[in-house]
Image 1: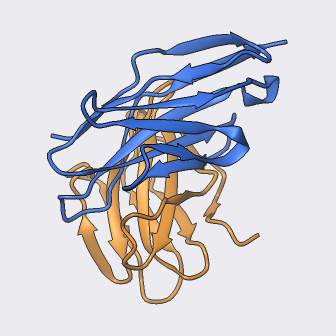
Image 2: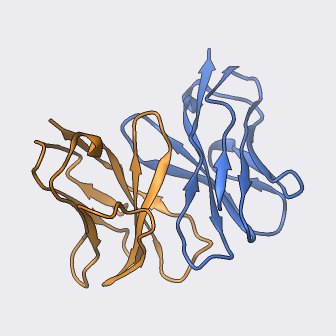
Length: 115
Length: 115
C-alpha cells in the first residue's frame, strides 16, 4: 500500500537559517512526489514536484527538494527561511504504477519561523 | 480568478440534513478529485472523477456519500443524512486531461459544520 510519513509535527527555525522538512514514502511502482503548502483557511498551494530526472528539484518561493531513491525520501529544503514561510507543509505521493491519479498525503508538518 | 472554485466556503447543517458541495475545476481541466481534511490531519482521498465518469471511489464511505461530475456544470459532492463526524474541510482539486504527472490544483475548500 502507498503511504507517506512526515515524522515531525512541527519544525521551528530562526529567520535566515536553513530549513528542512522531512518526508519518506512507500509505493509499489515509481513515485511521483509533490510538496504543497497550506495557509490558514486556504487550500493547498503547489510548491514543487519530482517525476523523473535530476534528484534535486527547485520550486516556488526558493524551496527545493531532494529525491533519494535508496532512502525513499523527498525532504523539502530552503537555504534561508522567512517568517512568511510559516505554514503547514504536506508531502504527497502518487504511485505511477497504479491506474489512478489519487494523491496520498502525509499528516503535515507545521513550520514556524521566528524573527 | 481562473483557479478551482468551491462553494460554499462554509456550510452549516443539522444532523440528518443533506449537504451539497460544489466544485468548478480550472479552465481546461477535466479531472476532479475530492479530499477530506479533519482538524490537524492531512488530506484523505475520497473520489476521482472525469466528466460523467467515476474513475476511483476507493476513499468514499460506503453509505450516504456520492459524487458526480456531469457533462455540464460543476462537480458535486453530496452527503445525505449528515452526522457530527462529517464535520471537516472538503477540498476539491483538478488537473488537466491525461497528464498524471501534473500537479493537482486545489480550491480553498468547503468547511462543513454539523450541529
